[in-house]
Length: 460
Image (tube, rainbow, N blue to C red; front, side):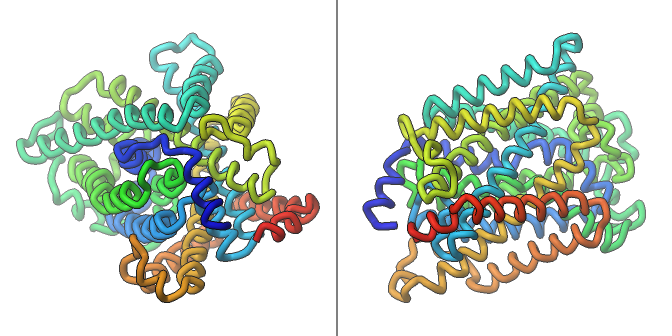
């Protein structure tokens, strides 16, 4: 891609201000995976889940620094799919983009269904499809209007989520310091080692928690997608990425520490959110209603950002003939046809999902994790290739270079490969593994049958 093409691709957007990107980065790591999924991770690893979140946080940080380095150097509409195409080859860009779209649709379907279920708390007699339709109208309107409206909606939803986490941390700290709550005798830091030790289920328990923890971090790569819509990506992207360590320590590690210190880990069964348990211990009887608002906000935020990310990546792929040409057309910088198509797919998916038992959530989480870490691996491999292909003069002039190069990147790649190994090792994840591999095989077949390989190679 020429410098002129790069400039054109970036100039389409410019609807996201620095505060939007900062909150998108902040909100992308706070979702239903934290509010509800954390219970499963705690049950698998016990208190040692804190180490899993720290390791997962390190992986996410190095991943985003790699993506940030490329995004600041060359912000493009297709983001990491385009980087994979440039530095790893045409097929790599094609499969990375479609795997990301696959991931986003899966997560959106889960969150759409969840919103319908959560709304039954207040409106038990209202059909679920009504809330699904309302949700699609809201996020569809925000995404079709402009990048600016998408940013405003994400800003508001993130404020709600962050406020809930901060309130929980403060409430938990009050319980610990002042021995408040209904069962103060069970509260204390010694809960971290009292019941079976810090690692009660052994190393295998920690390993089992990796999948759930990485699922919680899924979606953070949207920071790279926002680069082409940012008013000044060279300033806003580094600021957003550099807040990742603090966000992970505050919103995950500190939160899980408070939860495990207040409740013996075996009592966190997943029957209710750990957040509800904190507020209930404080005597807040309307804790369930409060959390319902927060989780609906989290799910709405996730659908909003996932639709935005998938739309931009597919639009970028369409420009390289890796998706139908109509999906590359934009109005006010918005890939309208792509967003509309994704909305239609979600409607069909939700109708089908209605007939599937609720226990499908674990399978969806595992499948989404496969897609997530596959995309992460391609981003990291593209970054390694980018570094190697970059002339020495440009390498030394990078505005946002990754730290600890190349050790940090190799550590992160090794960790992701290890996570794939977990999916092979544990039977519970085999169905997700087979589905993910099956998707790669099918899309690769389409790549060659449709002639996308020849069309894409002309653009290389």
